Length: 373
Image (cartoon, rainbow, N blue to C red; front, top):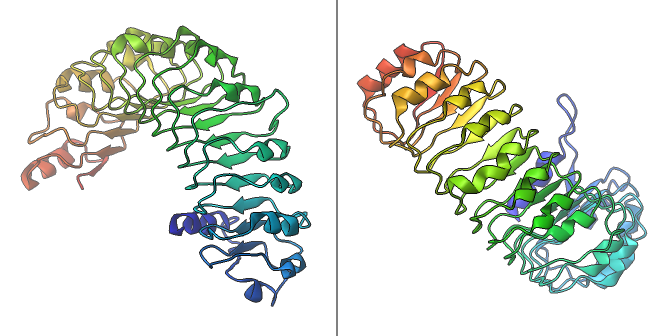
């Protein structure tokens, strides 16, 4: 719950120069200034029923009911349905196996957090919340999904991390406005060819799964901008569909079994951030230098890379501003590093440089910021 509170407090800062939105921690405290209350945190308070006095909080927009496993949600929703300003609700860590039907009466909800519960199926009542935009089901027991074409027409973001999926849930494509799918730490080993049915998808995060193959239809996701496949089982040939994703700006391929990057990477003209570390790469493709918008390159833990040649290629990427090279067992910086004059920031932590070598490296590129720790 501390994590949730940190996020909540962060979101309450509206802009620089304005006051923080106050988060009230009890109904009694809130009733002292009922019209000023927008955020109410009742988490971890052994709450069983929601006081009807909460209806006096006429501007309430956010409520946290998390870590109250004995709460009567049917009663709570019956009260909350009368607060028309309510947009966000946290019901995390409540040992929930189901969600009461009357949550569908909270018509104004735009954001729901259901992290750390015991749900084995997608809660059917949520499908009736036409204004819902953001949904977290982080750390539950869900294995599959089913939707109709008119379900959740305004949902943009869904988090399904730490669930039980083995097949990528292409059923989400029936949600017409879905743009972001975060589904790391499952056991996904299969992506159906119907992945191409997503028409507005902008981000897919599949980190820490079991994927070894991408169907050719994956390359038809022309609206995709951010893709993370970190910590899967991909080899070089499996990446072929990625090279046709011309709108990608962010690509994470770290920690797979990739021994070679195709020259077709040059097709990713909009790519800004690329991470390819913890792979058995020996070389970077010369075509990497044709990525005119690349700003950040992650090269963590690939000590076998032919670094001098890599530096030569990197030196030709004029847009490159940030380079990560941690955990490469360097004692001495390989030759050619001094050519990276366009780079503003280097991350060189977890290497084996002594103090003299660190000073030498700084002198190579005196205008760059170099972080060793």
